[in-house]
Image 1 (cartoon, rainbow, N blue to C red):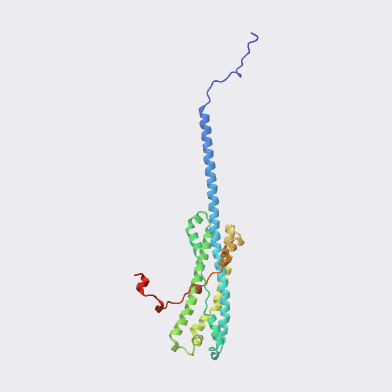
Image 2: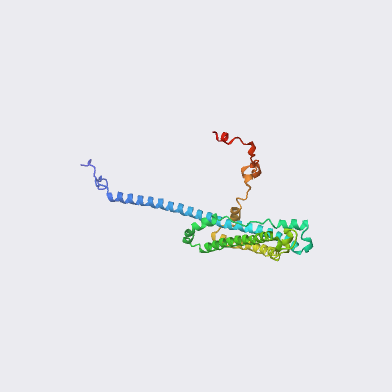
Length: 277
């Protein structure tokens, strides 16, 4: 009897089957965690992508505004130069207006600087306007809208001003007998309407210079709203200013290199021969 081992309850092997609900619970928890992790990661990636897209759009918009500010500043400098030339011409005595010097100065005023802007950034921003509204960036949306409206207004004003000058020049040329003087330059520079147009160069130069300042001031405000540095915007605005020849590595050909002499009818073959008949 002493050799018979005593079997306790703890050492007795269990024949009870494992509870199936535990496996089901673990499976559900694992699946749920996997879905949550996958969905959460996808959401984070999507949010990051949207944030990057918004930043790129903001850079395009503010870069476009900076580019226009730079352009209108350059036009302002040219208008200031034209104002100087116009002042010389308007101060000349009538008997000096038909001199070669006067003609040379006047010809400088007939090359007008263009003022335009690329509207692709504006279109991209307009197409994503609902996204910006959902983000609550109303101050940014308002600022961008005002800047694009001002860019259009200044571009229109600039075009209309030079259209006025061009139309007056055309009128004087088409009606020479209505104006005193032997040359078109002399006729124009004695015309009160044309002289009043030349006097407007000064005001336009000042307006354009202020426009450049104002646009950059508002742009800085929007940079603060979007947490984008001025250096980033300026770099983005002028990233395409590099000469194409510098990038391609060869000089661009001019139109005259593609111009050929006009055909001489006498050198052409018989038309039937040329048609292969």
